[in-house]
Length: 304
Image 1: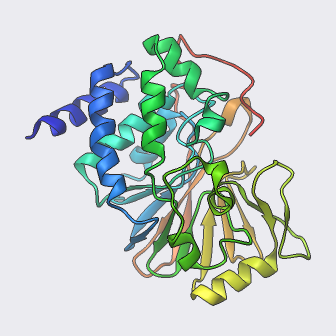
Image 2: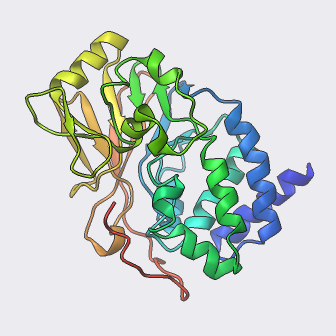
């Protein structure tokens, strides 16, 4: 076993118990996983079967519950938003980074809008790092690593996966592949749309998003994107759903949500199991019994 594998196993064991992670272990994991992410393209190609998981937002024990419920799954795609609002932002992301180091072809992570300092400086991660480690060094390093995260995935050549959605500058795979991703999200229109856009039943292809970032994408935009790129489905995250999921546009877009009882709400949670033949089924995730930590920081994180 290599030194970094020993660190990864130690981090996984400690995080699984809800323990604070050693700062040097965190830096070692981040240094190693950054190289792995950087070797991946903007858009990751993934062969099914795979389990798709949407926003987790620091809900570490709910994520561990997913692994328990879906123990037959061996390949996982996370759709972004690992940090902020929940009690274990640091531990959840470092846990997944350690898994990526140990099994790089079984764990895939793409970037969400909260993997950006413009958001996570306000909505949880900064305060978590400051309180736990009395320093902003880990916070800064995590945000450097977030820049290296891929921004989309394609499952079995037919299912396009993204955190947010589409926009006027992201209507083809070529345009998304050409984006320079190592920058803050608000510095690039395509990155912004990929991580911030939402679907809705509008007559136009795109309109401005009331969130203040990204676009609202209509049925025409989605169907044209699918047709032009020969896809069957867009799978995205980014919005809480009462039932843990919602289909749009004749079931051509699926909005998935995987964090149960999110930030004090009664939100349901689902994950999507995608089989080898690309058939798929939603799996309900019940909340874990352990939900908070004694030193949890509760701020008004619920705007974005």
